[in-house]
Image (cartoon, rainbow, N blue to C red; front, side, top):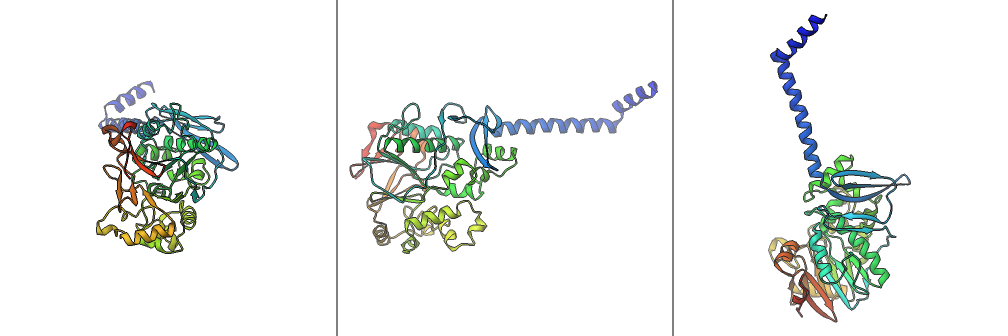
Length: 381
């Protein structure tokens, strides 16, 4: 039997069929190793935490140093870090309330838009304009900060931006100020499961724990509950804020600000197919709705540009002196209709690096374009 074993082993090592089998097995092993390494790389270094509330229990999921951590007893305050680990701060959860449709204006109102996962640029302008201090804490007193949507997609630091807004919102209220975050089209895209512009790190995390990424933002999660409480349109004094713009369809008296906000909230976490069953949802989430319409700031026919007469009628209906939008990107913060409409969305990273405009400051009835270099702030009206 010993001779047979030797013969069999020698046979396995020299038989061409077995050699092919060994090579195939080695190839499979190498492929799995490569796939694992690639998955680790796509997962990223830092993300979360995401809080899931299920069956009466709380579970947190996060990525720390490239490894997924699932915890049932995450202590507060908890730490939040950017992908590269350069920025990190602490957050505690707080009660979530649905914002009002209208607010009294403060002495100063800072208006920003479309951070798109770029924490470095978002934090830079907040710090430069003294909205936050070096410890990421609210420093704007009794004043107001408005962010006109689109934190999701494109960048790798979606969670740190959301958690910072969430944190500042609570701190601002305690100081007598306010933070207003409005929903954008990328919020509605991700909530319905469209990941076209979503970074791989988020999709890989979701795949790794066996859930679609939109479930990380359901009403059974902390940030999902918070996000689904937000408005689509808001007024501060006679200033109106909306992510994309208002088409002539909004002249219909049924589209009051509360009606828009309530309807978007109702259908925000629905799929595209589910929304199509509702005439209201089909409009609000469509190309003529307030999350997508570009015709206020773009004059190409395909966007159905808004005429000035219709704009004046709309401003009368909503009691607005000026309207502020994001969504459509411009090289610099821009105004339209002789200063009745302002487009706040710029390429934040590019403008930060080259010294371009980043947003607006409303103070004492004056509107100023703001920069990372505060000495460049200048009035535009």
